[in-house]
Image (tube, rainbow, N blue to C red):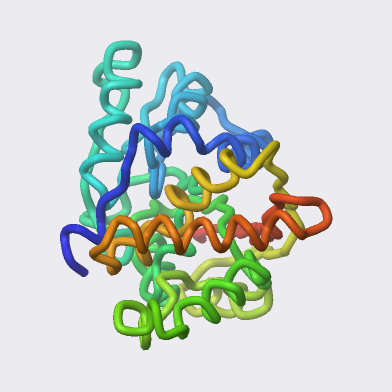
Length: 263
């Protein structure tokens, strides 16, 4: 993985990630905490949910991990002044975490689908948990963004873009619930529960749809297209097609819920 492909426009993501925040809050509401745990926020992004975790841990702490230095910088700016030493920030690959039995629990939302090898991911997470620890997570799964992805594939194969995107494999793993459960069990997790839920997301207009798709979904594709005009045309064509959907400017998101425990 190149350094460029690890990075995000974290300022834009922080502003645009309202859908991810709302999904994550629902996951966090299902987590029962004593308030003194040490937790890992796996794929913390800009720290919007990390702050909620910290609020629920008055006697505990969080290690916030992300592969992107930009994301970590924004998270540190957002959380450092309020939480100080209660939160630490670590740049690391979730498939190869530098922790051994360090955490009471792992929380993660909107991150795991960016990791291609989920067997390696779940082994890494399992090894970072103490006996009695737990994993509560959510990511994209199943038919996530199927409509948009079909359109992207057609566009990428067209003569205008094939030289940049031809043969480019999708940068995501969208697992079904059964496969995810099998992988979690292979990694050693017990009491495994997985399930898919729809999360249709609708934007007010073309401009909001376009900015979100460009920043949150397409950045790995767009960084392969060297010409700014072509990048704009790629996003504009997907936005034009989305205008014809019912409802217009909607994304067919599906969320994969994951939970498991360590003996």
